[in-house]
Image (cartoon, rainbow, N blue to C red):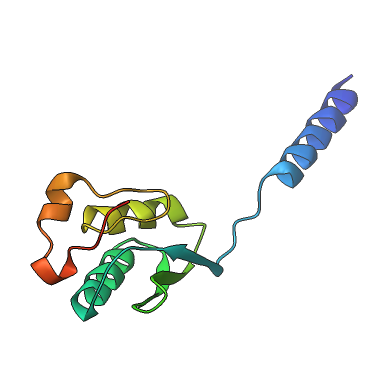
Length: 113
């Protein structure tokens, strides 16, 4: 009886281990982030880097695209988007509050959707 219970437990542990989602240590994402200038670029990249687990963050002024390399075992894309929104810049999934947006320099005030 003990052997049968032991085999059942080992089998169950094996299935649950396989069912867990593998988290990528070098996940690459591209998200749209609103902004206008070099000051925006510095602010957006600084906000992204403030999140533990972000390895690389580069924002393109021309395309308004933030390219991120992050460790999914330490953070999630949503946390990066929230940090960027807190800095005053809207992302695809997180919008800056009116207070955070109002703190932007006048040249950084982008047209909100």
